Amino acid sequence: MTRTAVPEPVEPHPVLSRFYREEAQRPSFVRRLFNETAPYYDEINGIFSLGSGARHRRRWLVKAGLQKGQRVVDVAVGTGLVAREAVAITGSHRDVIGVDVSEAMLAVAQRNLGIPLVQGAAENLALADECADIVSMGFALRHVSNLSGTFREFHRVLRRGGAALILEIGAPSGPLRRKLLATYLRRIIPFCYGRTLGKAPTQRLMEYYWETIENCVPASVILEAMCGAGFDDAQCHVEFGMFCSYIGHKP
Image (cartoon, rainbow, N blue to C red; front, side, top):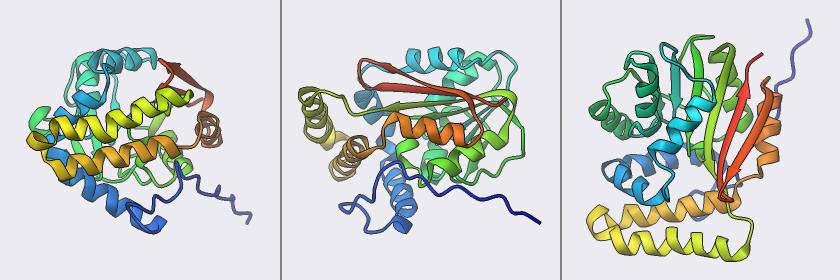
């Protein structure tokens, strides 16, 4: 019997030695980081999003094809920011399922939305095959361990004709804009809000965010991983030079 070759893992960025020393430590670091920052995350995200808030999330869910009555799996649900917009479109809390590695984030999402929630990683979703019309992920692709494995799981849980929507932020192409964004994340946010939001966790989260943004693989690698997982017509739409929206469809 011939075995199907499993593609080599594609990491979203190299090991970030400032935060963890080897690849195997990445998942536990990410879980701990988001457990620490869950109480502050909605405020941090409001500052971090640079105006790409609820309207941005809802617009791209609609562009991905989400309609009333459909089922959504929101991976890396966090406190429920993307899921909230999905609920508004589908009209039902029961039809939006949130998945996250952080139990603290899930607790906040439960208080905020009351949707079905599952603790788990994007690379190993504890969900049935073909159970969703849309799989979404908001600004969290940089935190997974394996792009290929993540997209294979997205493809598996999608129904035929369904779509994956990944919202991300990329490093601006120009050196001046890169420097401004780095300064904003690493210096201004922790300085202005660290006292009220928890100085050490906020500083660590913003430092980590910038390093993942700066070192993330280019859009072409992400699109190749989506296509390799079986998605058709995978595309990346870029706004303001850094807000990336990836959409791919399951044939």
